[in-house]
Length: 227
Image (cartoon, rainbow, N blue to C red):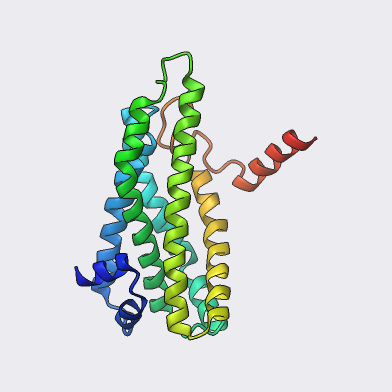
């Protein structure tokens, strides 16, 4: 509990000390925090579409985080050592789990707000269903962006404390962000839908979850917008 308070308080000195050495118990604690916080928030992601979509997203949102951490674990560990952060593979993994735990805690705190927005948004059955979908989408984008920025500011402070150099901390953080965003965006594409489309059926996964990719979809959207 004391470690969690230090984490939320942004006490980089105490958290850095807890990384030497990293403990299995700490990994388990942060996994539980991620599971509860992101699962609770995930349930509000799909709530506008249908209760069943809410259940599906409550399962998929934590899964997205864990798959991203697992998929990039080795790469992030190598980058941390190559760029001179001084973190071992285990310390790197624990630091990233910590940042996701902070983001999940913030998102869990946002859950009552997103429920309030859902309650006041136009329903799926109304004439303004598209407006309701847009309201929910923008609300969730804002909440997730705020949680991500806050968690990464904390992670930057921790890296600065561990490496002793601000430039190294920034380089390591940006390298981690690039890898996590690259993989996370593709995994989110494969695990879609999260909010759910008003025109499509409620599903755990789309019928063709491995067809195409996130980056092709972005490129097509840009072509339609610019040409």
